[in-house]
Image (cartoon, rainbow, N blue to C red):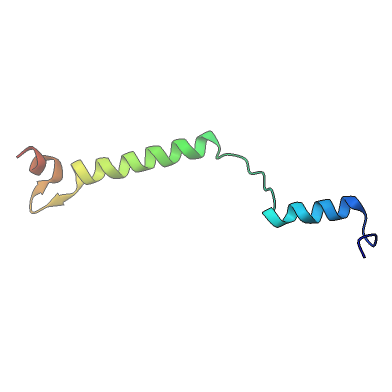
Length: 63
């Protein structure tokens, strides 16, 4: 029974037990920059632009 398959096929099948190797490229620089700038913009809007009861969050934090 062990002579039914080539040694290469058996070796490849035994490596498949550990899962497939997937090579994935990292995120492009512009995507990382867009995520960082977008999150900074949301944080700035929350601190300086969000108006709750006539007062911004930044002025409330300053006391």
